[in-house]
Length: 235
Image (cartoon, rainbow, N blue to C red; front, side):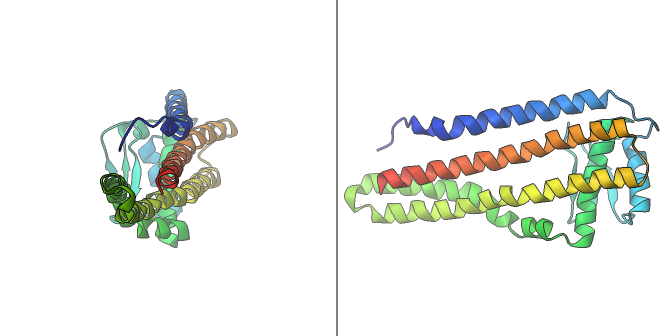
């Protein structure tokens, strides 16, 4: 029935190594530029206040959140949550605050990909959890039923289709994040908050952060391809 499958590593290891590199890269970039004070000695709160006032984002609330690199924008409550590291007068803090406000601008303007991502959050959660359970449950059902296990194949296929929702979420996330970073850099430059040298640091931090989303998409695609390979062999 079930056995050690070495082909799993063919799909999993490259994506896993990429994800590990991406995590190292973002932490390295953040640590480097969090030690570099910006020329105007603006804290993350200062940057948020200037950008919110000048970019028409006064409606956004700012809250503190525990953890490292846990910063995010919540479109439901119109709240930007910043960690302690993003409230310092550093280049890294400027980059992160501006990025999250980039999401706020997307939300305000009704950016298509942000809305698309929000519309499939529920499907993505179901796909990553129930979809995976159905897939392996179907395989188990088919294994017990032997050659007559057509129902098991159908259940596994249903799980795989649901899992596609989780994969779609990671793919739609890419334009959302890249666009927010582009907006962040534009806002910082337009409002005269960064120098050319600091712009390089902002690019470094945001570019490294973007790779974590690319890695997440790569991992989900690798898992989907692995599921397909299993079904092809057991069909």
